[in-house]
Image (cartoon, rainbow, N blue to C red; front, side, top):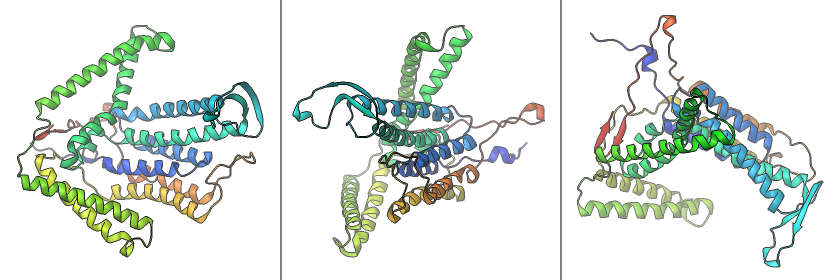
Amino acid sequence: MIRHRSPASTRRGLHPAAWWLWAGSMAGAASRTTNPLLLALIAAVAAFVVSARRTSAPWSRSLVVFFRLGVVVILVRVVIQIVFGNRLPGHVLFTLPQVPLPSWAAGVSIGGPVTAEAIIQAAVDGLRLAVVLICFGAANSLASPYRLLRCLPAVLYEAGVAVTVSLAFAPEVVMAIAGVRDARRLRGRPTRGIAGLRGMAIPVLESALDRSLQLASSMDARGYGRRVTVTRATRRMAGASTTTGLLLVVAGVYGVLDSGSLPAGGVPFLAIGALLVALGMAASGRRTNRTRYRPDPWATPEWIVTASGAVVVASLVAASMLGIHGLQLQVYPLAFPALPLVPAAGILVGLVPAVAAPAPRRPISPRMGGTVPALPPPAIEVGQGTVA
């Protein structure tokens, strides 16, 4: 008997590349401002979208780890400024014992007067880096690293595997720490403080080593690294096309940035170079025989999410070009920062994925008369084909 799928079971997730493009645009917007109000707004938008569209997958808990990492970054940046930073003028809060340094160490100091302006500026610099980390943490929480690997071209597959393993490091650590903490809590052992950290370090390290060995065994068993035989002429053509295309792309970018240096502003060089790079990558991809099982579609929701991120970074760029006041924090004179309306409105457009992205699957409670739809196992593409 053939069963028809319910709408909840056929609901798809957003393309992982769309989440990464959105998060990269948010991070790019954060890197263009030092206004703490705008930075806090970017972090709040990213956190709201994650809370609205994250799934029950283990990597969806990564954002909390990146928030904590951001707090550590801010504290470290402030401590470095207090101990080794430049002694900026302003309102002196306290004075540390100063160590004299030779003349060749100009610009570096150990100790001395610490002003409120210096601490605020260091904290804002750390906040900007922390918000960038939070944006990429949002991408880790929303996009499956395994689905992201499936979207790469064949020529970038091996490099994509390495990148995917590195991107999955944070979710795997979160899963290992949560499992070890739950096990210690059930056994009545401490999970906080020095005693809890000492008891969790060895099990987490052992779990990481076991996962590494399992990954290596599965990759070897599934034919990772096998190559399809191609002619020498094809390899040479692919290499020459890619190299020539990259050189033309570099020249085209230079022409776009420096108007008048190349004919037509360098746009023809950029277009021809991009075409040659695409042809070279397509020819190089013939060496890797890959198949895709249930490829992720790129439809209207993906375009909307990507466009919302582009609007966010474009609003910051436009505000900078128009000279709108308030993008950069001014500590002289020391005052509460103003909130520029144009960049703030552009950042709020980043909330669109909370509505436009497909809603994640929610398990239906049996008490409500429903059933939990069985989800297919994730497809893992290695070597010659795809293993589900």
